[in-house]
Length: 273
Ligand SMILES: [Zn+2]
View (cartoon, rainbow, N blue to C red):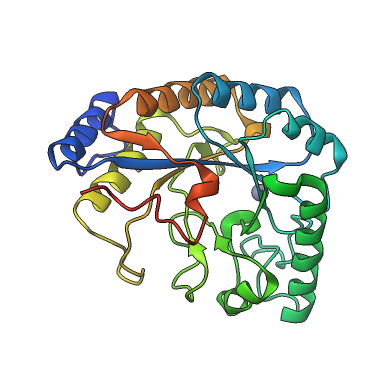
């Protein structure tokens, strides 16, 4: 069963989908993004520990206006971890009743792009070579009119959730996430094993069959795990540990290095024939 229903999907469905990739002679590629890092915490230590235990690459979307040298010191101990730019302040500028957005159309483009440049400068200074100029819009939401300006601001990549950014101009690597493990509308707990696995299996099956969203550019894209270390409950941590280990151990699956992933000169996520 590839068109997995969220209520029934389990680990055997993931295994079956990965077996289909293997049968096709392909490697299913994955990447991992964790959002909202600002400073050291027990939760961050746990996250970094999990990634290290399974030797899985990890990208941290860091909020420029809220972070500082303490996080930079912590991450220096984990040189393989990439830092991406999570907006600037992560403040909501949308009026009440509208979906939350920092990078929406609620301010002038000049105002928004000035804050993004400021944030980029700050992350470069703090994190040095660990910083990749990849924009992760807070709430995965960005005014499409801002996107053409991103390469001129020095951004080489953009990452949202499940194609929310829409079509994007050349010169920008657009690599989204697809497996959000948090149930934001119901108390910010774990979304549940079946729901998380269904997101994974559906995205993998769509890639394998060459299906894309109707308005999305046709491209293969690694399947992205999205986590938020500051809100994880025990069930969330348990799922992450099980999922990253399962993928890492599978012969037809591979976690991609984030530095390679967003390097415009490489196509690390392209499927192998
Ligand atoms: Zn966020």
